Length: 435
Image (cartoon, rainbow, N blue to C red; front, side, top):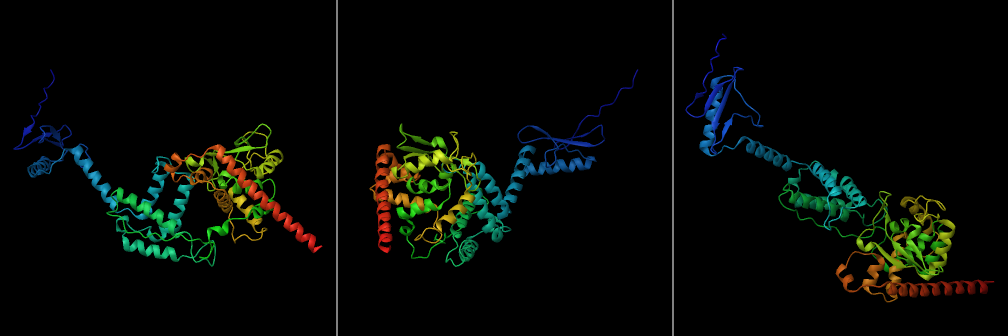
């Protein structure tokens, strides 16, 4: 017969129980205030045993004292609270550089106020402002230490920075945008509990880098003759872009994103409708949805440019329905890049007399919208044709119809065409007198 193994009974202490394990180590157990039995655990909630009985008893006495003081927590809850406290402490010590990078990652994947994801180009612009203007002065500063005095000092430095676009400019054109991004980051830090309160952040006034204070928006409105000259100055197959910007009031990205099937003709190709369905992002080079829901729109092509548009599509655009209307090369399937177009435009605008220095392609859109307004368009009609997202409530009550859009486009076209005709007659008369 085998020898019977003696089982040592668990020894009861004054409070709790101690037991010697087969490994010769000691285990401590107790009944908690919740009437549940607990064994000794480490601070990260793992099993804990002791080398000696005295060590186990000392631990048990410590737990008993904690329960008496009302400080004891079940092991799992204690671990959760310690981790939360550690995370809170780490958050309080996070630097602006670390928090700004987290914020940039967050806004790239989380919807904005309107419930839509921010466009890649927007996130890219925010990242540039953080890295170029905010990280150097604030990068190593703890977010919780950013206060009004520190922010005001930074704003003064940003405003004083020289312009990288124009050497003698009185303003740099970036201070306002950089401060706007800083405010967004700090507001998020307040919501996250990293920053106690929002500093008083003054936003610098946005002033043009290109012009002095005497410049007015009216100075950027080109005459129909100047638009015609710009069209002639741009090489083929790209010059149609000038007419789309001026007479259809399209943005650069909307022009570069047009495809053949976006132009819908009537039966005898004497009238057309252009549908804006996408844009080519200047930062990423990718096609994306228009800037807003209002940016997705349809409008009449003014008669002034119908013949030129028809010739352009026949001679310079590929036959496929998705062929780019402003291709990288004649009849090509590659879209013209924004950077390449900027170079083409810079060369063309210098060939036209009377335009302000640094005349922008976007100023043609301003020209067209001004001409439409001069023809008597309502605010709602202007917003619709321009694809603006503001005054949404107004647009709901003042719905511009396509018939009215066609009428406005035709009236604008006739007026501009007449001005071009008269200018040509005057030029011819001057030449005849000179001869």
